[in-house]
Length: 582
View 1 (tube, rainbow, N blue to C red):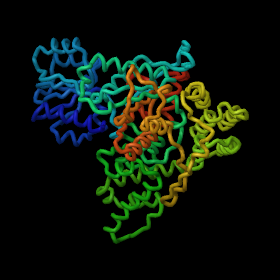
View 2 (cartoon, one colour):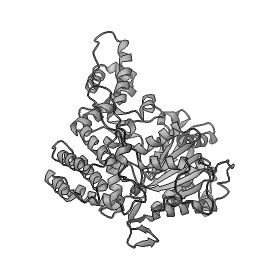
View 3 (cartoon, rainbow, N blue to C red):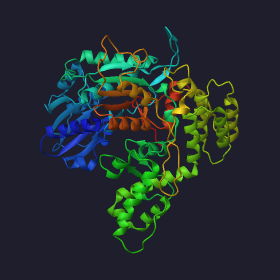
View 4 (tube, rainbow, N blue to C red):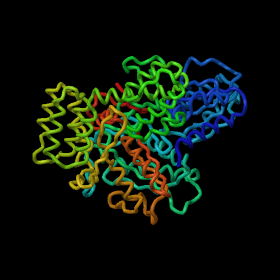
């Protein structure tokens, strides 16, 4: 169950099928992202693909010596672009691959447009998702839900709040069914009962499986695979926390957008490092350190650089802190040439370190963890107030502390939320950010949640974990476990309650599940990706893939919340996007 490998194999097969000779790869906006996260341009160049073009580009030249490989989503717009293309073909022959199921009527329309008989083949290759990590996929969608205008009452289930943005239900269904087809799984489906959106998506996926039963006719396994559909609103705490493992921290503080990081705002950044790519497929250091904590990464970079220093006896210098390393890299241009990878990671870790220090994130994170995991109101209110009065705590960090407090102590008899809101106002926090506090409670507060996100026994169950590392990186808590950890743990042990997570349809799983696909409506996080990675590593015989409508950091999650609660001025476009640093 490797989503990265599945997409890579599809792309390799497309290129192989077209045979020898020079080729152009014609894509749309979304398939460009799908390809770019699993293959570098130089890797594809080695396969005789010399040109990359967008199907919607008006400025393409006619090049009859090239074969065209078209990899497109099966949208009406793309079919129209293809019809125009085939009427006046710019290339010698066309190999057309749709990333999902295409209707017979659209195939007929393409055949009628192919008067010059340039189409060699039309196939469906189900790579209709972004393979973020081998066990993580995203659909890059922002704003999947909107506020309900009606109120739905169903027994004791009350679904206030949110319903699907119609185009998003369709896109999530397509994305999920394509993952199932790519992994060759025909699953049983369970969904979160407290979420009307989860039920609708489950029914929509089931409908496609039934309609396209021939496509889903895979070899039966002893234990059927399982698709579990969850709703982000059940755990609004996880996306609000600062992170301390490499991939999660990069996304939280710098913004990962299809594996790319924009470093153009970093003080004194060199021209060649203004945008860097972090891909575990092509970067061994990144692959080995994805889930390491910040202290360990610093140590690992230090070791790499000390290995290099051993080869350079002159000008020995101690590498005591991240700033020493940055100085070392800047002083050795030939080192940069030899090891672009290391210079890239030193720059990224250096910038993370600068932000941690500038925004006092160690202190902020400690209080966040306390709010998320412990049940000590008097201590919590003092610590939050103290940090709100600290001028170095940023607007975003101040507002996230108040959000965490609001979610944790929503119905506490001595809640000081109004007073904390005044404190935000005095601090000069913008009205837009202050409004978000109420929106987050509306999105993921007690009346919405179907599970016990917060239990009084939390404090007892916590063991404080510290990590030590490089000088300049103090200890910090990493106590928090996402709700997803408990849900999957219960599922793997066969204890997940049918009353809260019913099966769709009459049948249910007798054995403990082995192949599990989890999808989070409203977006997953890299902290949850880490949870799944650890469960895969520590649970023999169980394979889990995690997907989300997006992979959120705090900024993109808050944007999602504002769109869902109807408090955002603009609705996100259908294609969606990852949050990048604004």
